[in-house]
Length: 96
Image 1 (cartoon, rainbow, N blue to C red):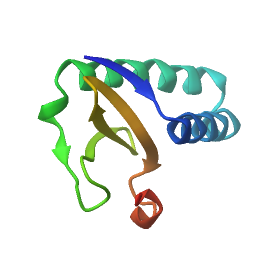
Image 2: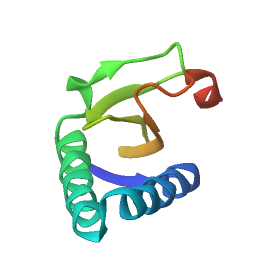
Image 3: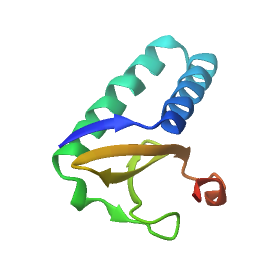
Image 4: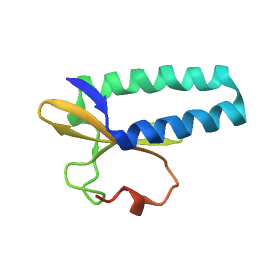
């Protein structure tokens, strides 16, 4: 299944990427980008294997990458990455 980023997920990713560049350097940030892309490919290949997390919003599922949680849903045969958040962040910000 194909995947795409929502506008919110794009903003989340840009913020995380910039934080990683600032704290750990561009090489580490580029590694994160590559790992993120691979994880999204894995999610797209098997979206039903990931945790259902409907306490956040209807249809929500969650996959992990390092200390980050990738929240996604399936919409019209496409996996949509809805949010990317630190695993310890306030989950209330994810509620739709």
